[in-house]
Length: 452
Image (cartoon, rainbow, N blue to C red; front, side, top):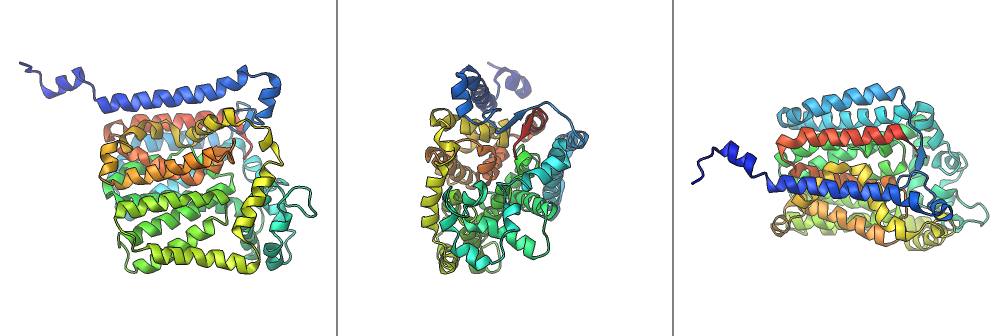
């Protein structure tokens, strides 16, 4: 007869779920190590074809520090030390505001490790980026009408790489800032940071209404201290992530009738998600996350107004002269006019996931076996379904072979939902996993000069 006290018995029989967390994290580390080592074993010609010196990330190996280094370290220490406790004690509105503020501070601190010039100015003023093109747009309606005719490389007036690789909504977003008097790299960069970081609030709101408030509170520190902040501060994909994240949040609020006018929320959701597919073609896959919301809420009530909102956006662009499907097919052709023809899917097909891992961190990998457990999925657990929807979107994007490399930034709109999986980690281990997240982010940003 075992008379050992519960604490002793627990030490003798370790938590099997904890062992599962550690096993999942070890597998994730193995994936990342393989993605780093395999290119080093390739022949020089094969390695050059990857077009990523720091594969699986897109950047340059260069250990460095910057003015943001002490800021990032101090912020990480504060979040690890007090984040979990504050996440449980703060009133809900203050938790949302605090999480967003920390996310912005974390993103800016990591950006300043590379320096203000490189972090904000250089990437936004690159000839392949949006701002140089914005200054050439004199007639916005004409730009939209002629957009498709300038997608392919080699045609007269061909758009730069990033402009051509996205629907006109992406360029229009920066044109709108310019026309509002917010021209230049600082307003554009701040828009990316602020809208991108607002996605963490949208995720918390969604998790709260589809699961419960305690679950959302457990996710808050991980969303605030996400390694993804490295790319949130330096890419248009962060802006895209924020827009569609709020589309999903509004859909969840409408589906659970957690707002006074759910039909209006559903319509607004459709408008945002509809505009999302005109920011990036790949964001059509956010439909899988939207379906997950409806399944978790056990309703299709918001579907009609949401679809109406999305179709209104499609109709507006069509009336302006841009048909989404035409643009998509031309972009596929443009994609294979560039380095995508050389980048081997035999490597990137799995190394893409290692790139994504650098954005979501090992804590997310550790939590996946918990949130995707069949028992949780059978009960239509809201958190589990959101993570599943994002995971399926990643799988579809990967198998399309249209995202070979650079997925640490391209998949940011999916990454923010995968990060919600960390809510399933036990509270007593939160500080440990937050430490792992912070160390990964600090390691990457100080060892690699990212190209974004």
